[in-house]
Amino acid sequence: MMGHPAFQLDWNLVRTFCAVAGAGSLAAGARDLDITHPTAARHIQSLEENIGLSLFTRTGKGLVLNEAGEKLRHTAHDMHDRALAFQSITDGMQARDVGRVRVTVAETLAELLPEIMMTNWHPQKRSRRVAIDMVVTNELLNLLQRDADIALRHVRPEQQELVCKRLGVLRMGVFAHRSYFEEYGELNMENLGHHRFIDSLSSDYLVRGAAKQGLNIRPEQVVFRSDSNSSRRSAVGCGLGVGAFPIWMGGQEPQWVMLSENQVELEVWLVARPEVRQAEQLNDVFSRISQVVSEHLEKSQTTPA
Image (cartoon, rainbow, N blue to C red; front, top):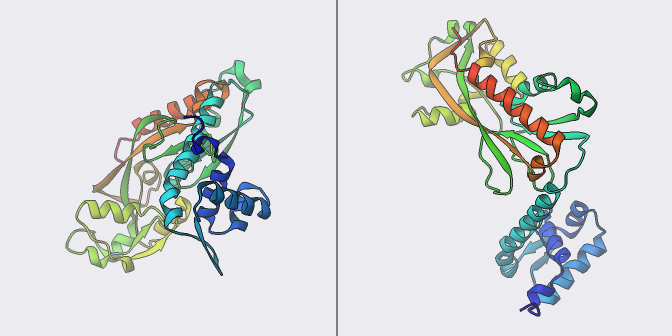
């Protein structure tokens, strides 16, 4: 069994195949792996020779997967993910000091994270405090690839090796400045097409939430889009249109009016690499994020007046 050609295959060749297939060229794949262009070319050639198949079509714009390459691509990526999971679990069984923790957080939750730096630090652990790098993005970064250590997001991860915990729900409301309603009137089913909207660029919280309630917002009605909460808040504050925000955030704006009948609940999940179980400092950050965010979500269930 161990003499089967599959067991003789060099994993580095498959790793390079995944990188080149994803990047679309030898040069780009080599950069992603931090290897030289000739090394990447040699890996692809060796892999093709080992399996007896050509995997790419060479074009003037780069490499394009042929039929054989497409069929092997998903299996190769599965091997890649399992290798990362193997390494991550191995790291998780080794207790290590962590000096800096990289946390990726959805934009709707970003303002909660700085509070964690000052909350629930045990005085005895001052010398063991860690620095936090916060990456604000709605993109689901790959923790097994070490894009981040901990993630605070709105969807449960599919990778079973990750540690995950549901913290609660974030209630989103629809808001506009009082001056906007004075000019455009109330917002309801009958006059929906008369209004202007402000939404997230990548997540479309407002448009998707409205669609779930049977309300169709046309693309041209969305007059401003941004993944920055501060930009959207400024747009609503200027009376530019109607926007969706966490209810606790909208409640901080005295001149904003919320449509109480239009609310959406987003699940909040805390996710971490397997090392969180053994690395005390990483576990400490995970636990504090869990406590602070859970308490905040529970307190923010009250609808602002």
